[in-house]
Image 1 (cartoon, rainbow, N blue to C red):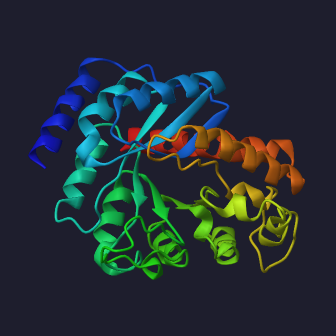
Image 2 (cartoon, helix red, strand yellow):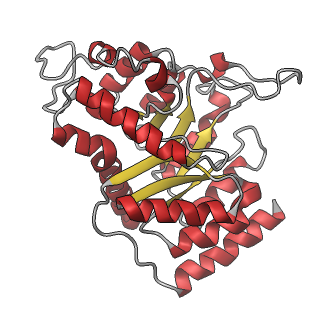
Length: 301
């Protein structure tokens, strides 16, 4: 924790002493879900990929890898947005949020492997602090991997069910909530929660677009309310599919997953007849708008 604090204090000085040339023009792609694997060489490959597609990525950084990630994020604000991958059950969680905010991080995540349900009041101080900074919160939702089956682990997908996001979104309306993996396999619940909560979005990274690749039009039944006029659904002129944002879930340095996930997204959206304008929001516009709103809100505080 001491090392983490010293690193971020140093970075804070860099932010003050050296003005950042932050991105002022919307990129073509914003990947809201990229894990940093601790290898600086990966960051250079990621930057090259983002340059090639005019892209930006939310880089999810655990405290142990701050020393190599933070200087690169600082040097490339037009390509990388820092997210602090905090341990929600740590006694230092609030302090880590403060330090991450002061260092220019815009969000928290991927939040996962919790000891209590996501919507347990024990975590409300974390959400309240994040709301103070208008942070974006990326939650793991749905099925989760099990890398070491022979090792007992206190991990339960029930604590990370997508339904847990509903209370959080309602109690803390000034934070933006992104549910990674769209609750796989609880897609219907995820969509309905997104339908009524304007501050909730989802990515479809992971296995969902693999197992559904022979039935992509399935998602038309999930995002069903486009153009529907009814007192039983919020009025909106937007496509229901705009509750999606792009996320690749690149982890372990597997950068080719970016291209694979991008391909699956395009194929699914085209199969469902999602209009081009809506696709532009999904791949960039929505997250860009959220980032601009966040910047304006924090500047006025």
